[in-house]
Length: 324
Image 1 (cartoon, one colour):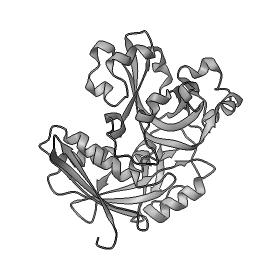
Image 2: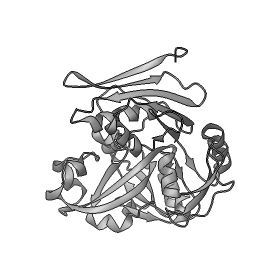
Image 3: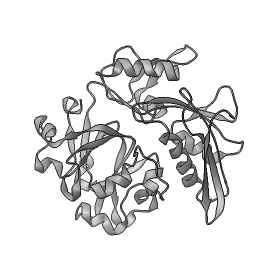
Image 4: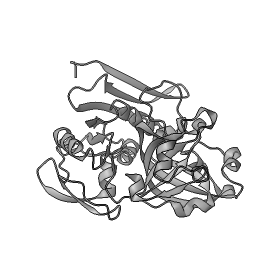
């Protein structure tokens, strides 16, 4: 806007400019004003859009809330389509603008009051004064919109609009899964430090895939909080390092797996045997990944009944009490 320094990102495909993004170097107040466009005729237009929109999220630090106003020229169908998967909605004031509230935090009973106040100040969004009990992922949550109107919004949709926020309501269950250090750095990404190195497709996509043995399918339910445990081997943390949200899980035979199954994961076809001898795998689609500022160590997992060696080598259900 002439008053602040900007960062300019250019996406190139085979040396040809295929997209650009302009971002402020730092957030002024709570609002991020971004400008983006992509070459719609590129076959990789969706990946280009994901890459640029992922950069927008990196400017918001963990625990913070910000408003994003994204200006994109007319006839940017692919960019708008991908932006919707990141939680953007059309602006009510400017036809070329998309808007989104980015909330990089987990709302629990303990921090509900402070999170509630921050959302109200930054996003003009009013949540209930106290956290409602969790019944199911599509339960209606009373929300006060910026225009003052009180509406009911399904929990699942609310998390998508505020992504990557997670509403860790009392009564919500979950699942814990193991993930090796060599894979988590690429699958979970979301590092506080940005990088100019090439990113895999799993790091760019808002929806990512976790592959496991076919017997684990029963452990995944839509709306579960999904906790990632990094084993000690290979210099791992020996702790739960991140949490996300389960969207869906399905079975797929190895011979039928295509790019759409493997690209959002960190595995290729030659590595599938490392997650079980069965030729059929469980693919779990998840989003809203948040790294925990304080990983949950092994001794605490043992204290709450989910840290024994035989439990940590596969996915396991977590009770609502264990989730909290």
